[in-house]
Amino acid sequence: MGPLAGFLRSCIVTNMKLLSRARRVPLAIVLIWVAVPAAAQESAAPDPAPAPDATPAKPPMRTRITLGPQTAPRYPGADNGSLFPYINVERTRRPYYDFEAPDESGGFNLFRSGGFSFGPSYDLQGSRRRSDTDRRLHRVGFTVELGAAAQYLFNPNFRVRGEVRKGLSGHKGVVGILSADYIRRDADNWLFSVGPRLTFSDAKLQRAYFGVTQAEAPTANLPAYSPGGGLQAAGAAGSAMRRIGDRWGLYGYAKYDRLVGDAADSPVVATFGSRNQISAGLGLMYTFGG
Image (cartoon, helix red, strand yellow):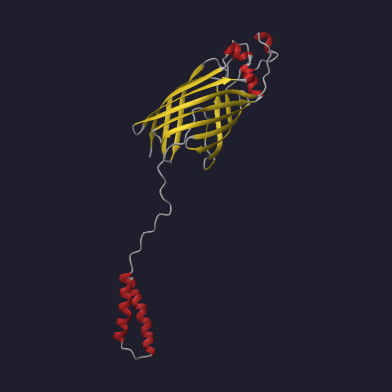
């Protein structure tokens, strides 16, 4: 039974009950009185509009992978660079990717509000083998560092960042990095950045890489040296990116650190290493999704 027929039936039954009480109105008039307004109401009612979607669709996820070679000191104070792969994976639903400095550690944001963000960080530090010191000094094992990072983007052209990490193996010390970056970009078409770097470390880390124990001194033919914690290095880093076509792009970076303080005065650095710490890399970028 359709809605109009059901409505008419209910109205007719109701009005017939009224007619049974007062038999003064002709039945034909009653039927016309019931049917005409009901039909007019049904024909005037518009079709219900479809309900709007309460949850608009998210922008598509885009992923950008950068692969290439890089050279960097294998451990703090090394006298030359070692060849490593440069690997970086970025994902976003935003109009363009967040800025990442070439030397910042891995991690992700747990909290973001305005220009401020905070989250865990991790890094890996290569080992210093005994052969790196002509087998005269102790070995420092491969180090996994875990910690946290916080940054603040004052505007699209200026960012500051701080990291603190603890070595879970290897040097087992604490390292902290303060950085600032000046950024110029045209969305994801091109980007250029440059800024200063300060590296701090505690006494445990500095003694692992730059110290000479009393037991080692005679056989190493070096004076015993026990550095303290503090500023370890000062320098700068820069990067550049250029998109080529819709999917491909080129990336490059360079970084220079100069050991300072107790690290710079270490006989280990003077004999087996260098105060100048240079890193550089090139990469090919590919974007998919979106």
